[in-house]
Length: 303
Image (cartoon, rainbow, N blue to C red; front, side, top):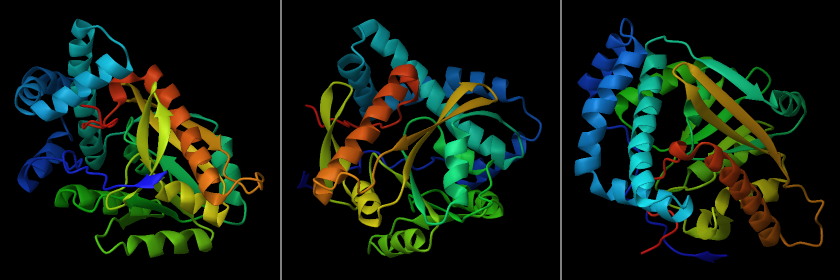
């Protein structure tokens, strides 16, 4: 463990485009076939980004060469497929804003239901793999309020539609604040017996990290989510929402061990162990869905 400034300024994940473009896209999805939009995006938009967004392209090429061990030619092809898949993920969100429906096949949904009915809060760890956000537009938190930490610098249209759809499902967004006030809201949510969802791969503004083995190399994970789970002694689930076909997603729900049962370990050691468990889950999912890794910067801090 240690402390260092984790610089994610290279990739903030903000949806590009103007408000007018976003609203036009939403209106268009009320009558356009999603597959045709995918084709247009793959032919026109993706080549543009691969040419002019060179930093993201290079980091993704390194991912497929160094972590997935692909040949240069295969790595280049997968960079293109990854950009196409990421474009589809973004378009799917706008399609949901327009009222289009997607099908979800859920593994281990009983784990989520059981914790939702029990007293006490629990935590969900997500990451920038697949399309975790879209599940919030479909699933409703009936038993407990669902609190989701989100990047506060998103486009206005995206934030407006997020609020509109998520609030209907008893889901509250907690924007990341520079003054770190979001930490108080998060702690209160767990103390009040609610559900707290946090990205487990990167958190803006947090300098504390823990090193985990991921895809054969050491990477820095933010310590905060894991330390919070251990401090509150709450159950933890990892959830991945992976795109299968045009209108089909697979939701992978897996339990993580964060209880105080390992009394011989310190809080820091238990936090590190929990982080490594989550890294292991990411490893497994990314190997199954290599084109759905969406961290467009040098995640392993390699030269």
